[in-house]
Length: 275
Ligand code: GLY
View (tube, rainbow, N blue to C red):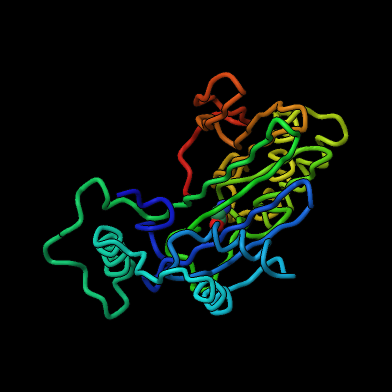
């Protein structure tokens, strides 16, 4: 039922779910990733095998699928009836200048009719009692994306970065902005220069805003990004934090005593955003 990510997530513009994922293991400073992978429910497991069973870091598209098949992953259609119906409605109502007529009777529930564009990503970073850091980021990316579009999640340094001497960071939200700033790498670097995880995440949010101001189509009437982007960080001491461009973000963190949802820091008050 969850249309934000993975199985049942909203597909690309052709109605196909394409998944991106990366993993990184601190003690060996090794990484594995897959991008634009179709028909495999758990891309993070394939990414881990790229790290553990090959001399490569990133496999994409048909090559990633071939590798997953070789490791016995079962192929399945990741589009559910619900996500197919929402995609078809989007396709049919996108334009009145194409050959797709709008639906006569709408099979899509009212609350889903306004679903226009979503990101759905999960980033998880962890530190164990032996001081080992690791992380994973996994996503079906941006809905209605062009076939073959790869976001930040499988790109080491963008959607995920781990340095066992310093800390780990990851991201969710508009991947294009992250790809253009290598944000996770920067967060870890900022932590290495003495910032707390939250300070480092906020600092990178400021960088994103400054760079986005250079592209007017991405800015609202205040000159601020129309999109959302969120960062999560953890340092070698087990301190953690998160920050978003806009108010309202939360993240789950286990501090060794309890696991709970916490408010993320932010730069700006929430306002309606396009993406
Ligand atoms: N951050 C996920 C994506 O843009 O694909």
